[in-house]
Length: 235
Image 1: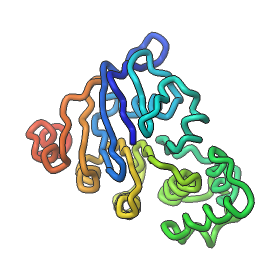
Image 2: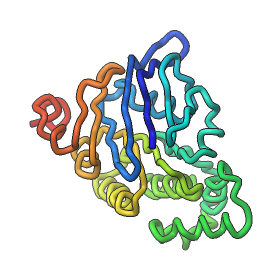
Image 3: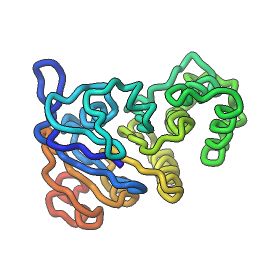
Image 4: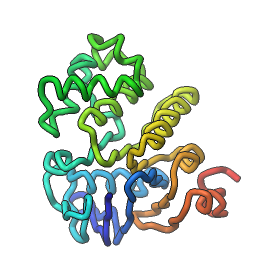
């Protein structure tokens, strides 16, 4: 579904990613692990078109998207939920969900049907459609951000640190929703510092360090890595 090949990317004079290659197969959940500043967000922003790669190739469904504008990549089926959630806080929950259909140019009954479908996973939103997004709790905002992305019926969902700033109970709830998405067949690239939770839900994982992939493999193998245990799990 998504391939990144020898990606060099960064911001102006700051190069962050150095020859990064990864793949996400259809129906897979792939975890992207690493400390703050490792390059996880830069990688996802590059994949989604918010940053143009300096070198390398990006393929979505086998077609090149490297350097394409973010709105074009979104229209081709890649949805990105950034750290910070990317909501419109002054707008209602319903209007935020409507914005989720913009990339696919959904209108009328198609948009209403897509929004209604998100309530299967997030039923609590249905009773608060008129509430302002900015008035929701952190956990509720994260649920809304994921729901907004799903309105566009993406082929692949990129989640950047969905557990950031949430209490443990809410973190568990967010990851339960990710598990349900996985069970439905959704393809997900999950950037996350909560390594234990991420590896429990993911099929495979990549570990980023200073903008380079230093470890990759099935989640069970990565979980048993002594370096991962020492650096991220406190074992």
